Length: 265
Figure 1: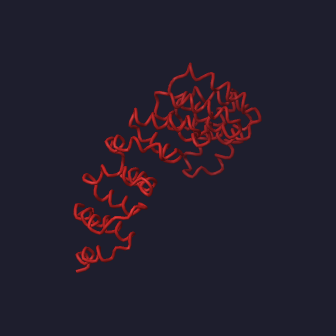
Figure 2: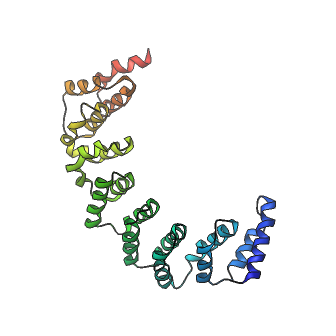
Figure 3: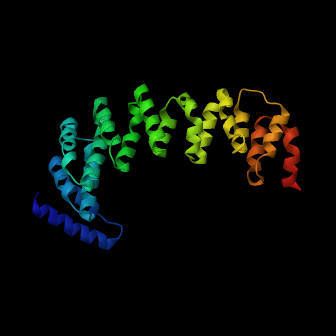
């Protein structure tokens, strides 16, 4: 790296920080950085400690990645560094690799996913899951669901709910409920499956009657008024409005009017 250029940048960073808003200095800093070879700049960046200089160089790299003409060679070179770098350097390389993916064939996405989904670092796994929609297939459907069932980590479950074959959950619903996923995830499952598969949710009838009544309201199955009222009555008072809302979807005014009056009068 050209020492005089780095000295210029450090001086500009010092002046910029005195202004607060940055003035023209960010543009001048990027003008200097643009004159470095991108590969050399990345090599220098990987070794830098956290600092304002590191942040400026990182910003410049991210802006230039999308314009590189040799994305495949840069990807392969950085990928080969992964085995011999520390954690911070690994995280920087992963972010650059991810920015290169839009410029590359799908085989690189699969390579990226396989590499980082098998990492011991949650940040790596999260990045792998962010691109899984671009390579989703039946094998990945099974893999992501199994990863969730083995680890109980919600990031796998959210990826599956966004992209997976939802019926694959049916044999595992009770097991998933025991993992205690957050309420919005449970609601998402119910919304996607209860129309055709209401019977698969009977296990929640006693423990979460408000969710079961929600499932009933979405189901193709007809329920008699007695069953609906029994379920409503089993809902705790603080959650009762959710039950009333579910019955309203079924246009059951005769079942909810008295309950609504409790809030009116």
